[in-house]
Image (cartoon, rainbow over all chains, first blue to last red; front, side):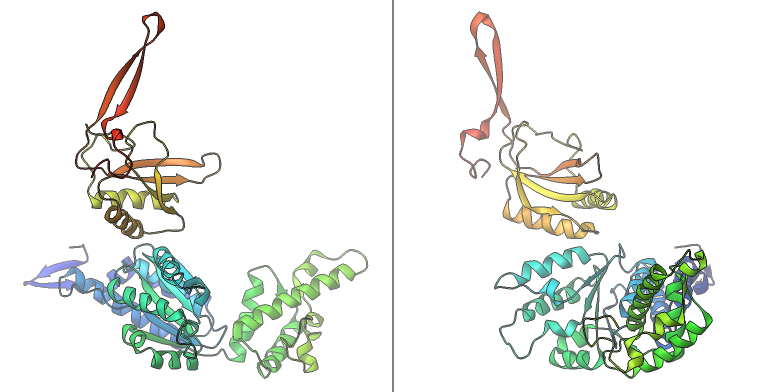
Length: 307
Length: 139
């Protein structure tokens, strides 16, 4: 038994707080709070799950339980709400607590699991599962695995193999299914086997305008870009307008916008007569954002030309 | 006669737990593990049959042990070896290779002498099992 447990009067006292910090979980959770903007309910759920897993681990060590808990999860939420990012952190937490051995995240979609002809699917799925052993298998847009309109679809075969592994090899890997909320709900009603094998359902809320603005400031800061003060106001305006348009995908839209703003900034600087100050290479000006098509009422993803 | 090739071959045969630990060591070093089998025990036989492709991108020994179990099931009475390939530039070769299964009965090798001109002698080692055709040598 570890140093954090001591015997008094036959009862064993366990310092859970010490266990918590020994596993390094507090660091993971603090990093999660620091690095990801918003997502309060998600962070709260992850904290709960981490506590549960810690208790489970202590119980295992004391011999109260020998079962491996079911850890499979489903992440639902709109595009760009941070599902993949959180899955990556989750793999770290599970590794720190010793519920998975290696801690890698294998991110796949239907194409990686389902084959194109008879007999192709099983080896393909098993190949992916082999890579995921000891880590987390993240299946993005999991509902595409199941095509109700085509009963001979090979997706069914992949689903059966997955269900079997999720049941029989629980100590080897954790499966996280991710996708949009409503379609995942439909997927689970069509495949009750999945619902019963998944212990934790986490719903990712959309970001509000303030959170998106702060994301739009932290993202370029990592690459040494910053907003000129009027550009920040332009960005605020942009977010409000962009949200109302179709194909809005939260943080991913913001990232694309920033990429396009950098493109325009580069064009502007090249067109600039004479030498430029070095700070100008770091600064995104309001006109880099204001020239976006969004301000002309055209959807951002409407066509091939850059908005 | 016990065939000794590769690492650990002068030790008693490794248990599955010990093999698993060795495999994890290889994987932790970033080496690609592969399985090969043969029923031609001659030491100069370098071309063993491959059991599938070398397994790249595997992180946990359990995946390899599953393949090994499958290979043993399909090929009971032959030699199986496990190789770890290091793709690091300038190395690009096997780092480690060891036998993980051997036939229960290993008849060993015959030494043949060829008398040549001028009373000089050439030597040849030949495995007794090689008298038989492939696939029936250890069954």
